[in-house]
Image (cartoon, rainbow, N blue to C red; front, side, top):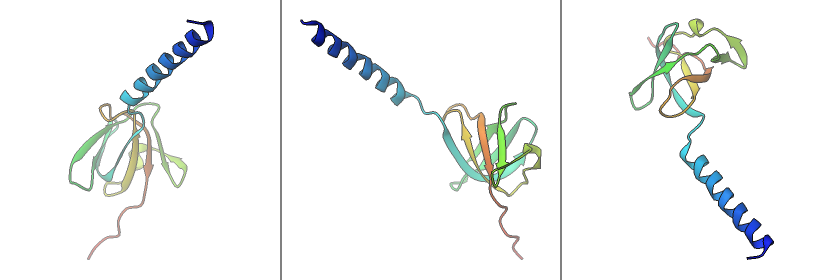
Length: 106
């Protein structure tokens, strides 16, 4: 084999390994739903299918509403949120984006 072919083969193998690692990871998984409960350690969110998800809060978790920072403790029950979590198995929030609370019904 010539040097060029060896380099191309090495690059191809490296590329395949890189792609296979990326395919296994699921970073930045999103959880969307309505807030059911808020504590200092987690937020419980119910999705449209009715499944509850416990989103863990970390010191690095950012909470925003209209792109402005806020505290997780100020998120109201009934508010809709989109939580960007570490992965579909680790529900530690990186970012929680707060929407609006649904209008009260009579």
